Amino acid sequence: MEVSLHQITKENYEEVCELDVTKEQQDYVACNMWSLVESQFNEGYETRAIYADAEPVGFFMWVEESKSKTSIWRFMIDKAHQQKSIGRTALNLALAEIKKSVNLQEIEICYNPNNPVAKEFYSSFGFSEVGMDEDNEDMLAVITL
Image 1 (cartoon, one colour):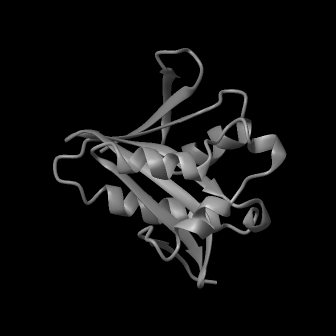
Image 2: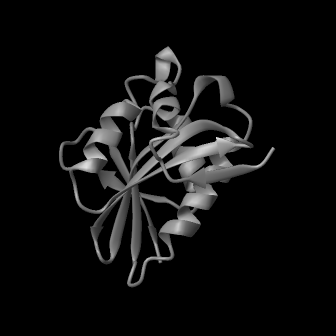
């Protein structure tokens, strides 16, 4: 299976909007449709569809917070495609794309601190926890370049 990232276009946006996580994960991830709308009306938002072979199976959105910092705001794999290492491969691809930014010094991600799977997963990519976000709701983790 080949995992790749693709631009979201008028040809694939509906399929991306139909992707969903498990019921237990729904509190952790915003809906893809909302994220696509958000990306159309805000500067610096990048979205990608995650494909397994020729099928969209997930979604990414990252935001250039400044020239030196990019934050991954959305990352999901459809419930029918989880536990297949697609997410691991896709995050590697996204990080490689993000790291192409000139002057980038930090990549940030946040997650629910009650989600031990997320902590272990992100730390395996080099993310280190730095504390809770300003709303004291999500754990912030960063990769410093």
